[in-house]
Amino acid sequence: MTRAQLRSSQRGAVLLTTVILLVLLTILALAAVSMNSTQTRVATNSADNLVAYQTAEAALNQAETALASGSYTGFGLNTQGLYTFSPGSTPVWAANLSNTSWWQSATNAIQGFQGGSGQPAAFVIELLPPVIKPGQGMNTLVNVYRITARAVGASGQSPVVLQSTMQVQ
Image 1 (tube, rainbow, N blue to C red):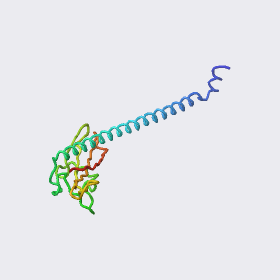
Image 2: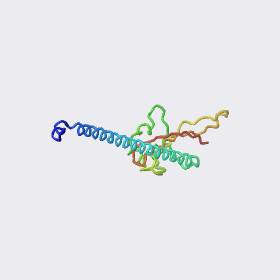
Image 3: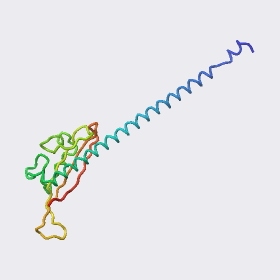
Image 4: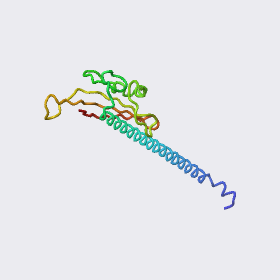
């Protein structure tokens, strides 16, 4: 076969195969980049949530320590983070759970531990009805408090709310 005959018998099959392979490799590379980006976002959100959880837990501990030492009084005023539980009505923390500006205001909540978070955690303390200690008489009432702490992660997102109850004699 002569060169002219060889050229006329070639129809570009190698070129077409190469283009198809390049397109497939490009699609695989884009899928890998997209998957990596998604995994990075998941890891970042998880770390942000962990920071928020730890900050809320620290604020809860801060509130419990201060409450045990008698630092907080004035629950009847229902302001500045100190509230009296009112049966039949929605607690203030529940009514403002997603309202970030409400939690950031010192007239509504007590500003607490910040840690690695984007903003300080905040907490409210509610005076619940007193209870009788088990096995004791009617004259041994103890005060019960519900502490609600709210914090966000380093990005200012991922809000976490933790609660605890505490008895103080």
